[in-house]
Image 1 (cartoon, rainbow, N blue to C red):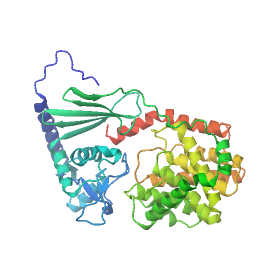
Image 2: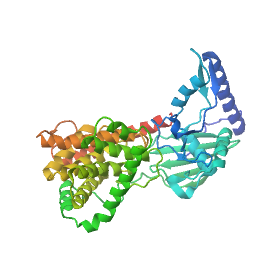
Image 3: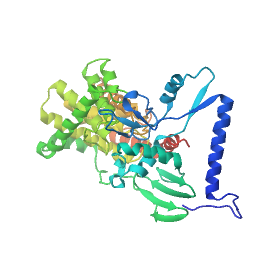
Image 4: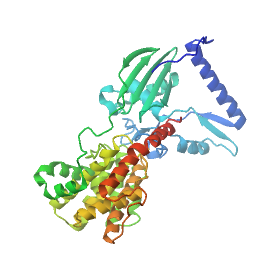
Length: 459
């Protein structure tokens, strides 16, 4: 990245004076707008108790960063993502009247996470860099934020993910650029000196393992003929682990409790199938540390593709072998769909997994290749417009909708109904429709992905 300075530019202020000037402008703006609009400055929390319900996670890029402190046993503490809910509470708590308002100290989740990584992080743990924050480090993080300015800015480039994070302190700065993968640092720069750099060539977004030879016909045949002993260990683990976190999500208060909400609407197998998948996500997106067997690199997709099938198998009282084969089918169909879409996309992966779950359910009922193919096409025509805006509590609701679409796609086939060639993105042949969805997710939603990142970073 090249620093561009206008020709003959002669700054009046040095770097430190510039930072002081920025602070002066910010403070003056806050003071004057507060006076004009009758706003009072209120100190906002950096962390809140999960049980308070004050953390607004609807626009989080990732699930809330959570941890525990010894003085509050059993209580999950979360880094604040958004202060929207907290501000409404504060208006009442501090006795604000009509035509009065407040503004806060502006702490945001991403910047807070950056500070937490600097003060208390372990770089060797990659995406779990701030998983082990200690009690005594919490206040150090807030103090660090008070004394440093952190800027998070998405960059315009050919890359689907291109983020610049700059830390300012006194008369110094450090800049880090991350491209295409969350841990792929391509540049570290300090005070105009490059400390680390590597070529920011376009990242190969294809899944590393060559899965482009997968097709629905072969997946169906493989699922019928595979030796159970060859797949039993991993499929049994998927059943056990994913079922356990689903029960946890139903038994306790996690996220928006989509699983529990669904069960209040009925107790038929369709509702239970959606509820279990949603409940697993409720728990996982809200800090539950129970293990999950993933699909396509995603815990949510692993739960979505498996839990509805497990519930249907229980309802139908099928043999363990038939359940294993249905899960093999569903997992491979989900992977087949995701292969064309790639790793980073604004296309919600739960759609692929929910569609695959519908196929697994169809298999339990004795569905043949034709049935599976129609279930896929019908399902994808319904929910392929759902976006991915990060891992957070609303994922559970998207999962429920995607599983519902998968089941509906199968039920349509049973009734002799189908979406036909020319109905939107649907074309003749299941493989051709899957290719269209991959094109939508990888190419069509490229700019959508970038725009979501801009929204998340207030740019």
